[in-house]
Each structure stands twice: as structure tokens, then as C-alpha cells.
Image 1 (cartoon, chains in turn orange, cyan):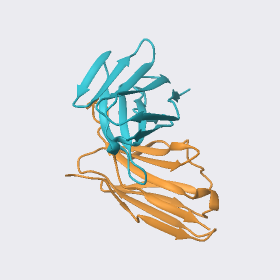
Image 2 (image 1 turned 45 degrees about the horizontal axis):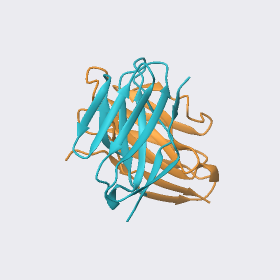
Image 3 (image 1 turned 60 degrees about the horizontal axis):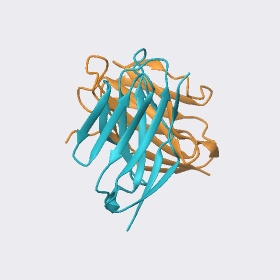
Length: 116
Length: 110
């Protein structure tokens, strides 16, 4: 089965350190989403891309977060500097865009980030 | 704006039927999706509706009324393994963004 791959699965770091999360979308998918999930907020959209172009990153704190797609097989989410309130599970999901209207998003297993 | 509402928690008994409701107000509409998420795992796709009516898929069915901004997920013959969170998500037609509801945590009791 094709699947979205995220690394690392777990990350523990100290406040102020840089964190980089990586995602390999399913081959052939042209949209990539980054979500953050906490008990309090549920699934919160951070950014999404279509055909590697950023469409919306309004949910992302721009002063410390950045999202990129250097190529079609890799999406990255960086936090610099990290803060304890960034502790959450970060999910990447990929899918097909408008011409496949019934195409769902497929999620990776997430990166569980703890910032101390 | 975008707003999706679901009940926070529900409890049901093994073998019973449960209906999980979702109401939405979004800037556009291009489909409503239901996902299941077990604790500590990723959400997995369950069902999709874009036209009004009922879609049946084994023990799970999903209903949509676009005029009312309303959907429900119906789970029949509940099993213990159905204990999970159920997330309703709307894809808006403009940006093709997926907006997720807060999720409903379902507990199935023996």
C-alpha cells in the first residue's frame, strides 16, 4: 500500500533549538498539507501546497515556522526557535486536487514533538 | 469563515447503533469526509459524500444534506475496536482546503 512517510516519529528537544520535520507524500499526489494536533485544539491547519506551490500558510506562526517543498517527493516543516507551546503531534497528509473531487487526504503517522 | 461542529464525546454499547452528527458552515463546499482516529494513531479515511443522501459502506454509512449544512456518520453493530475519535472534514471548493471538525470521541462499552 502506498503511504505518506513522516520522519522523525518522535522528537524531544530543548527550547530554542531548531526542529525539522520531513514528509514524503504518496507518489502522484499533488497536494500536501501540514496539520498540528493537540488535545485542546484538534487538527489545526498550518500550511498546504498544490503542485509544490504554497497555497495557504495563514495558520502558521510566520516568525518561527516555515514550510517548503524542495521537490515533489519531499515536504519540510521547520520551527526555529522552538518553544514549549509547540509541543504537539504534527501530521503531514497528501491527496489529489480538484479534478479528483472524491480523493481523500492520506495521513502520515505523525511526528510527536516535545519541547522542554 | 469556516466552522464545523461535532459533539465532543459519545458512549454506546457493543452491538448497538450510534449516529455521530456534524454541522458545517464553510466558504465553499466540494465534499464532506469522515475519518477515524484511534488514540496515538493517524486519521484514516472512512467515507465521502458530495451529493445529498446516504452512502453505505459495510457497517458504516454517511449521510449529507447540503441545504442544511449537516452530515452524520452511522455505525452499526458496534464493536469494541470502534472506540476512537471520528472527525468530520469539509473540502472547500475555492482553495480545495480540508477543514476538520474537533472530532467526536466514541467509547464502546461491553
